[in-house]
Amino acid sequence: MKKELPPLTSYSEDQRQKAMNKYKLISPYLNHEKNLKTIAEESGVSKRTLQYWIGKYQQFGLIGLIRKNRTDSGIFKVEKEVQEEIKNLIISHKRNSVTSIHRKICEICKKNKWKQPSYYQVYAISKSLSPGLKKLAYEGKKEYQNTYDLIHRREANYPNEIWQADHTPLDIIVLNEKGKPERPWLTIILDDYSRAVAGYFLTFQDPSAIQTSLVLHQAIWRKRNPDWQICGIPEKFYTDHGSDFTSNHLEQVAIDLKINLVFSTVGVPRGRGKIERFFSTINQLFLQDLPGYFGNQNNTALLTFKELDDKLSNFIIYNYHHRVHGTTKKEPIKSWSNSGFLPNMPASLESLDLLLLNVAKPRKVHSDGIHFQGLRYIDTNLAAYIGETVIIRYDPRDIAEIRVFYQDKYLCTAVSPEISDYQVDLKDIVSARNKVRKKLKKQLDTGKTVAEEIALSKQKDFENQSNKSDSKKSKLKRYFNE
Image (cartoon, rainbow, N blue to C red; front, side, top):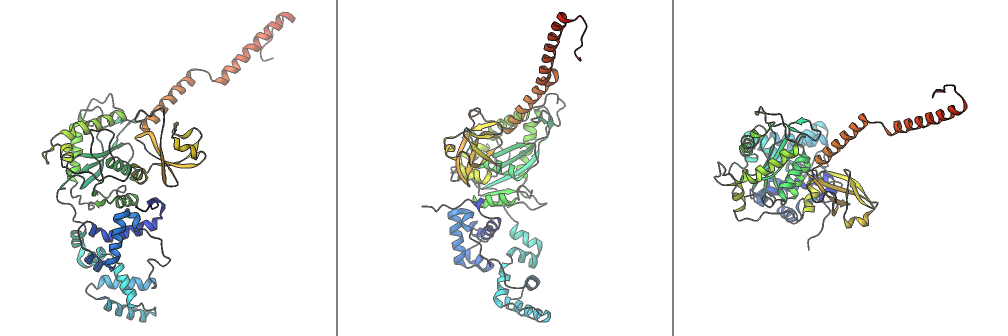
């Protein structure tokens, strides 16, 4: 029986980072790039320890590499200035042995009256320097890039071996939820082998780590539409150096799902032509015939955001996926589905939600459910948690249901009865609110307020009573202000 460990999010940033450092040591072995003997010699970590880490990672993922911090973990009992001198000597004297470096640092310490380090301390500091840093210092930038940057120049050999991701502002203007013209962004994840689209995300916001997480969530899990079959965990996720792609959260997610996160070199986007070609296809075969396209003179009737999203989904699933690709000479959907492989799926949708659904809000459980965005969400499991604060996670593209977590554990999926039969985008809720607000404003502008109606009614009653009283008692004319 597999031991249940706390979720990745329950550990500190320092613990997660140390686990990632272990992963980076064993990743060349996991990717079949180096054997354990070579890694042990380069890192100074024993082969037995490396085998232990590999076993833990294969069993539990990144969490298996996390351990409690020791008070002296990562601390060399050597003065800071002595450490710096040792590192400088190692980098500047590439041919010198550790024994030679130890002799040199002892001479420097005598001159400066510093405490001399032991041979073991010099050895430990030498092993703590990354192989990449030594490669860069000893052999220069070009050799470093050839060793550590030369990645995936060949084509993928099967589906889900390599996925690529990128963003682009679309060359079209559409109406946002407030009815104003705006230019949307498109995020795409493309399967390198078949050129099929695994996931996409439309938004008016600039690219962010949250959007990248949401589209990766959509790409990995099974789609509601049975005609869109692309799913599974990719072996490698190839992206550029955008801040959203290089976020620490996304890197941790990739390692925990056992995805090899690969970045293109800054200024050298090798292999990016495939996804750039897809964006050209979107422009030439999809956008150019729509109102609001930059090259289209007829921009009188702009599409709404929802209309563009529906049309894009239909184009990808029923047009692009069934067109013969110019390079592969196959239809993307057939190339992906006819290869005879079974996609590697996460253990559960809930585990994927906890990692990738970054949109999280604390909410209190009421007797009638959870209130969010003016909607009510219910589930039988919530009955035992009335009055408790829970965390809800949701996909803003479909808020008909929300995932509920209590103390970092999945509790239930709550649905809104009013919209449970539909897929409702958060933008639809905002748009509906704006329409109601406009109607109410129009009513207030053309009619009287409740207070004004009451005051006018009271004034008329007073005038009628005054007129009746005056006709009986006096013929003098009286005024309301009296």
